[in-house]
Length: 610
Image (tube, rainbow, N blue to C red; front, side, top):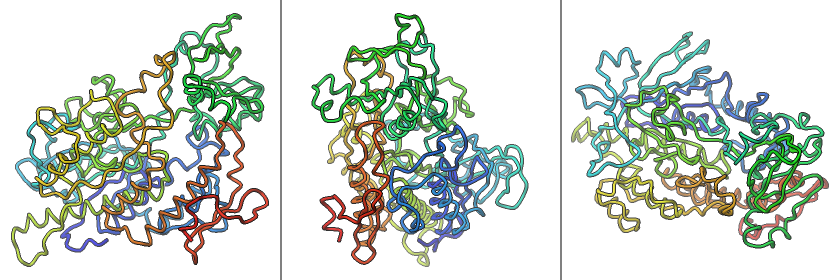
């Protein structure tokens, strides 16, 4: 991409220097934007930087091969094994940052305290001109009008299409970091940006579901997988591991090597108890000292009064549980944005955000999802506020890159449109390009339609019913888009519900807090490839070469998925496989097991890749 036609670089703040922040910063900088990457820690890498009792534990190994994990134009070292340790991924990201001179754009040890929309008082200009808040006050910056910007108000016009979108005031707290002007900065400062790209990840605030009797009856130790570093602390103990997905199955396997017993709560077993035992027969309930359990019914004092007994929905009981280890993932949390924490959703007067409660509300964090985001990327009301990397069950790095490519095109289009408006009808300037996003109303309409496609509860609306725009038919969406100067709404990605069905009625009380709008809202799984093509299409970069690359990555992804253990805590022999992309035949091969004998990939799609 090129910044040709831009009179001055637009200032963009990228929040976070993990994988998403690095690729976003690189592509924005290459396109001519004035990029500032704000990183809370002293290094790049995000969650991949190992710190004891943090997200990454000592023995963590990737569950995706490096051949599909890499950015689109930056392969991993081919001499490395397919499945990498966290240190090798961290080194890859450090090398990526060095190769593209991204450290020059990063302000380390800089915590973002607040992001709020502002505007110039008495001026229609929406350019930040690179001033900090001191100059901003002189120039008359004022807060954007207070209100709820998570829904589309009745009969509202699309102000951003008239060049009236907000600027963004970013408040940071820094200490002993190298500022982008090679200054030593300490304390709190505020600056104005034309756009903000949020790349702070979603592995910071542990999610711990409320289980009946856990707080009142259970007397053992309660941990979250974030606190896990190695299995030694569980030696000789009986452990209840709540959660069977990626972290649950890997940690259960490790803990079982030293623990007396490991009992894994697997919701698939709850479904089997309710619907029949075929699934139990296929997967089993016992492997060595690892036992599958259905949903927890409650914790009880027990006959011995020790307070370490757990009952399950199938009527079984497990006594003497020493540790409850939650492998239940994380909550989305963006406390620097108004409405950006779950506490604010449950308690609007919560002080967890540094912004006043009367400020413009930008987000709803509900049921482990973030609203309102158009195509899971752009804020539906203010599209200059962008969120990378929130989707889960995906191959992350290439998706981050494609998301960043679309946001770059969107910001370039917006900047050139603004320049065209400022220049009037001057014939010396080329015609501004068409916007890369549909109108605001069409963006909110997409959210309504997505809600209906996922069969989500209808109590949470994104479009005011009085506005007459809540129809869920594609005809309405097309009409809304056609009525504006924006392009047609991009193709819709239909995402199925998550693999785990609803729990049985006996455990409904234990999971009631996790149901409703947002459940599996960011789940992609097999639909990530259609979403990647959507991103590439909107970024205008879907070439035959990229299509082929995505096909190959999908083939390897599907093969890995088939090889993973179904039983939680089962053997991870799939990590002994070595994958190779064939440069000449444009396909891929896999060598299985320790013998590394080359065999055809067991994937029905392989033939069309070669």
